[in-house]
Amino acid sequence: MRTARAVVVGGGIGGLASGVALARAGWDVTVLERAPSLEPVGAGIAVAPNAVRALGALGLGDRLRDLSALQGEVGLRRPDGRWLMRGNAAAASERFGDQTLVLHRAQLVGIVAGALPDGALRLGVDAAVVDPARPHIRPGRKPGST
Image (cartoon, rainbow, N blue to C red):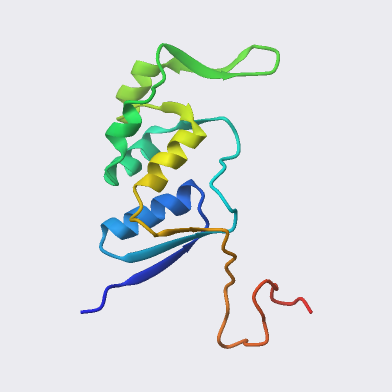
């Protein structure tokens, strides 16, 4: 019996999580990322309850929950400081079924990338989609370009 193979193009949080999910389902997976290293853009990230549950399905939920969670009053403010929306973290957790986690983006990327099988992540690799029906399109060119 042959093992199913998958190539995930893009090593962002979604691509890394897709690679982990495929690997846990028994696929031989390779995640390709154009950048030479995983240098997350931005400093912080809020992981909503539905994403916490999705990452939990990959076996990463407890590790994430150990890092950080919103506590007390939470919400969004306008530039002038007035509230657009506010609530209580405990009430939100009860309503949505899990916590909203707030952590440094690099921590999240590190946790998800670390859950990939050894050798599955390939950095500094360009990828191109090639349509066998249109062999004149070469890697790095968009359809319709000359």
